[in-house]
Image 1 (cartoon, rainbow, N blue to C red):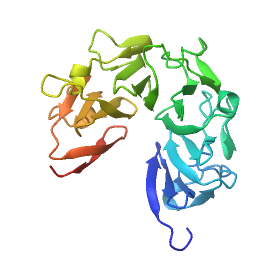
Image 2: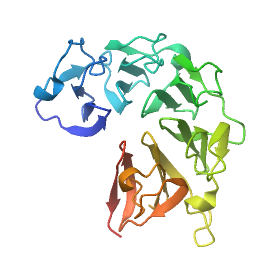
Image 3: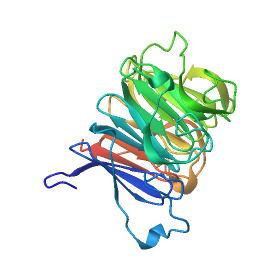
Image 4: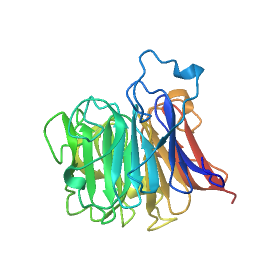
Length: 295
């Protein structure tokens, strides 16, 4: 790391991590079995016994966002480009094939000429958001997460996902292991795919984005018009934040990871009691963390 530089964000996959610095540099460490650290794979390497740190370069462009899938890494550069390396068996590297990629490379397909602001991936399906509110996807389509673009079970090239007109402009995206979630500029949350989609136990599968009832996310008679501002996912858990700083969680509640005081699985959003105004949430595989300001 250059003198005076400092880490401002960390992203973690199954057994590897990325660190983003304030100057836009990225460093990787951990398991590199599939090339997810952006360096050549060393057979039978014991990553737990050594700390190999690799600096990644996005064609000399500063990096503005980092993201880890299960064994895949993504970088978003200041010019809106998306770069990837790592496991690609389901096409999740977005590099046009289904092989592993130990070398960082820029994604093409429908992302060419598009200014991407965010990539989300927790397992092997990835979605991206552009500065114009458009959504793109690639990777695993086993649970119909990418059915808006293809009927194939895998998609190796980034492809535009046309949203129904009712959705409007999208401002945030998140992909879990089996589903996708988006927030529009009206503060509404939509979901599709398979699993805990946020609409109760009777709706565990959808091939199109459907709105989660706003009343489940804080838009009630006591807070009319309250909007969702962001959504984030783990592999099987979801968290949504509204403009009041309230956090709502649902999904597979392994080890009490939803923070709801019990260990039952949850198919729709329930507010978590936090003694502060939450402005950031992050989901691991079986745990969740938030950052909040005191009330």
